Image (cartoon, rainbow, N blue to C red; front, side, top):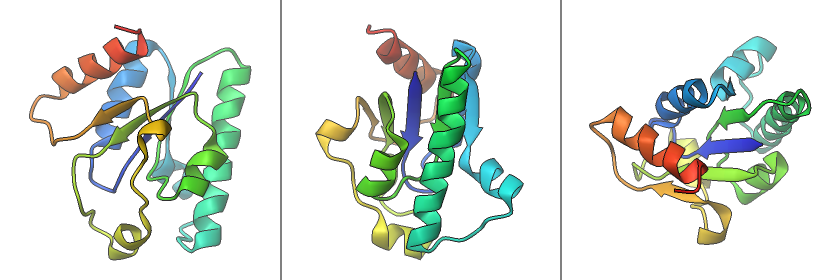
Length: 140
């Protein structure tokens, strides 16, 4: 199972994904840590697509090992999200603009058919959001 947390930078993807991964005994794959590991801070279109393919490769390896993969990355375009090919998607739609203007310009909001759960407002209680995600994951 591959779960993608996507949304603008600063929307809470990493904050929630890390806690959900811990609760589900899943493997958390953070895009910033992946970029750091590969020393690849290329945010051109090609660099973003390469990152989505890299994230897919890493998550697929986790799934092949019999674990749940929880990835968080901006995935700003439909193409990037399709490349990752998640089983489940959480759209962290908590902010309308992130801290990077170039990302704001290219971010394509998700269509309802692209996500299973949308967190649509900023949260004061992380535990409440985590419970919502886990309940959704478990079909409740």
